[in-house]
Amino acid sequence: MTGSRISARSLLRETFATAKPIYAPLLTINFPNFILVALNSLGNLGSAGVAFNIIYSFVAVPLFSGAMIFYSYRSLTRNQVTVGQAFNQANRRLLHLILVYIMFVVLVFAGFIALIIPGLYVSYRLIFSLYATVIDNSSALDSLSSSWNLTKGRWWLLFRAISLMVLLVFVPIILISLLIDPTAKSVGYQLTSNLLGFLAGPLMNVYLVLLYLRLRESAATIQ
Image (cartoon, rainbow, N blue to C red; front, side, top):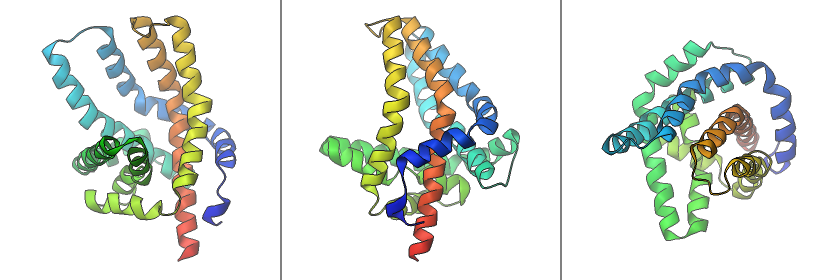
């Protein structure tokens, strides 16, 4: 399969076809993340909230993301692992995951400071950095380089693929949440959007892992 033949719509169909048997385990992996987000949205934590958000953003997010990526990757490549093994792999790579995530955030933020388009460009080119860290045991710099090389010449494909998922999954989440509270300020709005995002998370994860696999296959055929 060549990169030009990767279809976002085909990936979406494949996502729904393959996600069912691993949907519940992925929810299990991400459930602690959902609880942390829900607790944070229930009230003002004051000064403790700043520390909570820093720890959540730069420790919990890489950990849960790494476990979900590893579980999905091994499942979709028919090399099944348990939820516990997925967490163990993410935990073993946690320092590297944290470092690559911080570098990703800094580089993308710098891109958005430059303008919106550079920010989007950098975010799409580096989107698979965590994948290389947790799957290939790469260092932080090697993970960023791996994602950059893997997505070379594929920016428009990535833009189409991610935009399709955003339109079909995350736009409805926003609209449904706004029906709960058009001001988007209430606890009800926060809890609804968090719950719907939690339920949609496994689909987005499988979709991106499939895209990662197709890009790797494409790179192998070019070589």
